[in-house]
Length: 51
Image 1 (cartoon, rainbow, N blue to C red):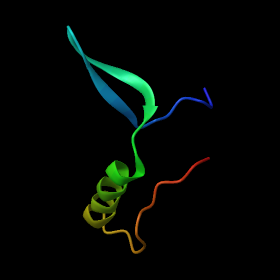
Image 2 (cartoon, rainbow, N blue to C red; image 1 turned 60 degrees about the horizontal axis):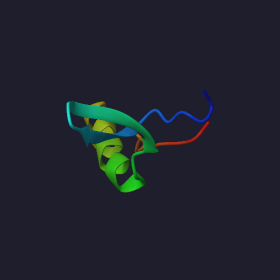
Image 3 (spheres, one colour; image 1 turned 180 degrees about the vertical axis):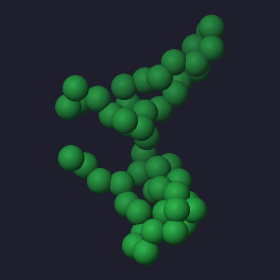
Image 4 (tube, rainbow, N blue to C red; image 1 turned 90 degrees about the horizontal axis):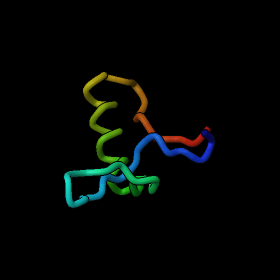
């Protein structure tokens, strides 16, 4: 379970879409996390982190 990413890429298949085991790049996640921080009115900017 430690090797499973929470935010993963979707890849097209012949029958639709499949969730891959590759993580989303930081450049994709960071803007969304920043918007979430603004919407929730956090005093500090929300940042993705690794456990």
